[in-house]
Image 1 (cartoon, rainbow, N blue to C red):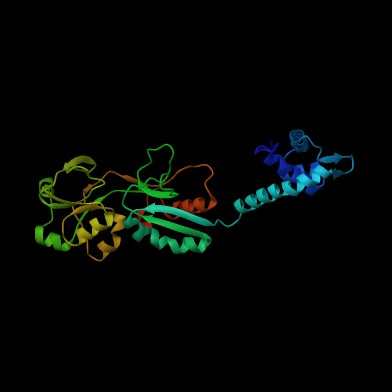
Image 2 (cartoon, rainbow, N blue to C red; image 1 turned 60 degrees about the vertical axis):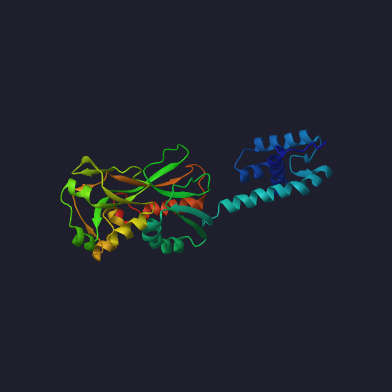
Length: 303
């Protein structure tokens, strides 16, 4: 029956370090531990194997025949651990990082940030999962996600990027054809384009001059894509609440017009979420820190 088990691997690597360094003291210095601890590990390995590996004198260490045979294998453990340490301590982060964002955020905000990110971190490869569904980061092995609100799951960490409120928009053609609503009653009579993830019921909860109100449109379209909601409003199919940061170009080109300026939503927090604060790989940390740096809190336009 073998006398070696997995608990011996560390001791074998320490033994190999002692042989390569030529002394317990030098091995302890390189390993960042004490001489007595190194000596205990080697003595414990000898006791487990029931052989003497080293002949110790006051001036030098000599390998026994058995020690020489064990060293030929043990040095492989040391080389493997050293290689792993070198790989993890690399100065430039590298590897693949996955991030999930909604389609509109991916096109309008994430895409413009990618050239600079790739310039800083050329060895990091991205896997961008563009989806309007609320994906499970852990189940689907995704490193980072951009969401509205803080995570409710204790296993997820949330970093706030910025905050913003929805505002009401329509196209000039829609206003020309149906008029611009001026009262709550008129709002209820207009056709709305509603994002299904935020409006599971017909009632639409908004804020009028910081006072909560309910909008119950008689006619409405439902859509699960924020990007398509914008396009439907641009096409004159109805009015909708949109994020001002996502329609800056459309407003500047007069494709969309903000209406009923006293109406909006509660303040929304846009957060980066990721599975753990501990042991985050350097490649994932680089992406998180870059997005936190470029997506200033409270300044949605810079995202």
